[in-house]
Image 1 (cartoon, one colour):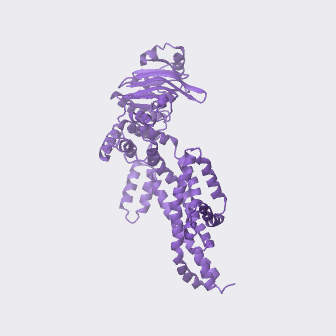
Image 2 (cartoon, helix red, strand yellow):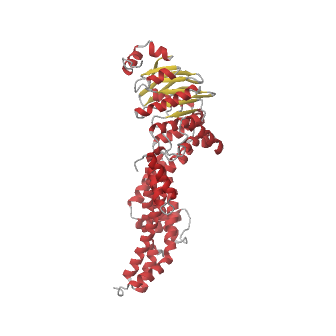
Image 3 (cartoon, helix red, strand yellow):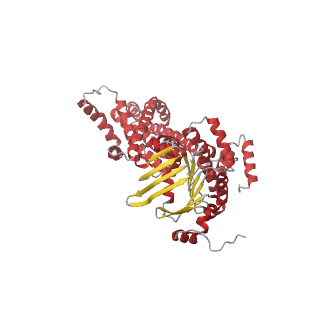
Length: 262
Length: 250
């Protein structure tokens, strides 16, 4: 099958694949942003026990977690226009990309809602009571006290969701969207260099994933800086500032004097 | 001035408060004593509506709230006239000591940031934490955290500060520093209602002692009356259990 393996093709194909990177990233960013909104809308009824909406949220989450995303893509791409037709809305001319983004937004929204729910319940009730005792209303208590801490807790889970979303976008080619995997398919057909194409493709996904991982790690560190002790921070500062080590030297000196056992 | 009239509270079928009347004058330090399960913490939490009373009336300053008809605004009124110090400190973990104190001043009282910062620094210095302004709760000892909690309440200049067993979660060697701070602000004439098990503190600092058991106020009076000559049998039994028979102070 295909032509003989030739390593140089990996590089040329890598460059060619990059032309579809924009589409993939567009799907990821748009669907995650929408997914966060969907996640909140789905999580709130369960967090605040809102009677009619709560079971709806549960069904929504079960469906989008419990069925393959490929089938969700087909159902929404072929099914949604039919449903909207009943409401006399014609979406048959809408770009495929819109359906794809819509599907991934709902799909990751279901997972994000679970992450939000877990994170919000992880912020201890006592701090909410303290916020109320200070005189805050429930909106102030949520946005000032609960949300920033919940966000920090949920970062590792969110990172997983975003990376999973990135990899899932590869299924969009089945609807004919020319994102990374779709582009790879066309290159395979054109060049007959199967293995080289897929190595290059895997490389691109891997690089983006690693980049995302790094970015999320950084974000988590920043948001959780309040949970690290003074000693840990000083250590970090010291190790970061090896180049401009004067400051690090001073902090280490101070700790030495305090006898903190460093 | 705080006035509670006929406060009742039930959790399901279990009636925890069975009609409490309590009057606290401005500048008074009231200590509530009682065995566990007597409803003293619940009573305290009813005053700022962290628990919703089933019935009764709460008056703080010029806010009069009828518990059966209390709406959101009524509850906010009560909470903005009071402040609370918690057993578990309940500091905002993602904010520094200074930010913890400033939060209510800026967000609730809408004071300008600079003024709020000045006021917060001043209060934190008063509780002896002038050097820990930028420390996060995780970097502070229990005693220091509780003193931030006291500063957070004090900075709001409330009509009353409610203390819910402020030293119960502390290591024994840290209790002293917290009690010392409470003693200091009590002397400044701030109205306080304190639920505590610290008998020495109750005896020295309070103007009025309330003994609760089984959801009712069994006996109340000056510290001398309650500690030296309690009238009710239940009060006598409680004090006997909780104070050592022999006092070793000279």
